[in-house]
Length: 337
Image (tube, rainbow, N blue to C red; front, side):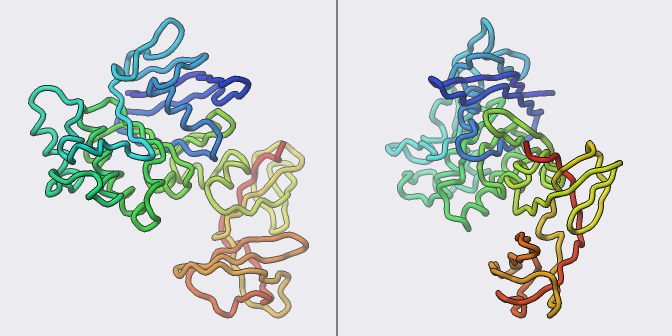
């Protein structure tokens, strides 16, 4: 069953077209990441779904009810949608228990205690928000949003205020929480690592509309075009030429069902191998070392190739001559417009 269906959404602010032709379907129990660069309309799209903005055109359906569209408007408080904002928006004068219970009716204590246990805060119910770490505050915000048992949870850049190490730990906890509770969620992010590690599916958004939807593996391995490829990770985009179902490019030839003519070929850095060779055709210009791997930037025939190698390779420092081989997939893509 589809929990969220957005069709043809559009929103303009003055002369700026923030969202145009926005389509997105999210299924029951699924977490979908809405990934895109700053300014592409992600947050506006989320606000249209939540009811914080009215669309100029299109419709939003949550479960079997149209909540926004021609002749239809349901206010945000009646949409059964939970919201987690970038700054978490906790009430500073309420303790953790009262923050989570805010807005609940009737006998709510059991629900609150259950959620606090789920987010590993059951021993901190009497703490005030300023007495919590950033990660703990974020978990309170998620618990509060889940407390009314919404049909849909919307998260707008929820990890952006956390440092890198804490961000990785908290997003793993939130992913497990969403799965454990069977919550249907949309996560807005510009962080490709979040978009690939947290959701079941990724919707890539550019210039106000969704341009590709798929599993994290699908959108990474077979992006719709070069723009999507770069959003999802380091990408070598090499010129190629398609002819008769084959594509030739600088590193060889691959199959490709593209129209005859110019195209691009995506080669991820991990699909390349660099081997020390005094007569090699490439030169290492720069090395970024990350401990578990390193990224080489190599000059070859006036172009730059990025090569990712597992583990340290001190012999491959700047100035080293190397031989570059294709050892992974090369993906033909349409030529840039």
